[in-house]
Amino acid sequence: MTKRPLRGDLLDEITARVLDGRLADRINEVHLARELGVSRTPLREALIGLADRGLLVAAPGRGFLVAPLDPEEARRLYPLIAELEALALRWSPPLELATVADALDRLAEEMAEAGTGPELSEMDNRWHALLLSRCGNPHLLRLIEQTKPLLKRYESRYLSGPSRVAESIGEHRGIAEALRAGDLPTASALLVRNWVKALALLERS
Image (tube, rainbow, N blue to C red):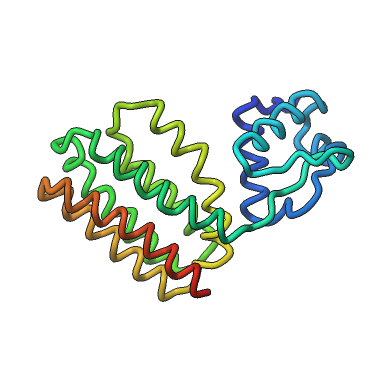
């Protein structure tokens, strides 16, 4: 018997389908429930949760729709994520951060080898998760986790060109080097710059 996905798994799977474009307009709940092997009740609970986070829109009489891309939303999200991640970094013990610098460099190297392939976004997620893994504030980390999927929609649509990817990987390496040196202010500033520069490129695209 196939194990039915838990609520967290449902949220992750539906989010992934929105980010990669498999869900792009109105959500057909009957078809999606069948594909995921769940009943309508847990599916609807997951859809409501994603609507609360802003990834979907609950439209009266139409069900759930994928929220449209909005430049104004991007202008709000990028600085927000930049400051939240920098805050999480500042709330992490510098000595512990120094111990993950080598692993961050290895992930950055994997990202460089991946080029602009579909696995690049997942590698970037892993890099940022490792960067923030020493933060001891679960509430802050949960807020970042719930907000970043909104931003990832713009990343995958507009910022996947090879020049931006190479530049971003270089910025990732600079952050790791600053952590290795115990220079937390520089690492935080570079992290904010990485996100803000992405917004500037998006606005020019």
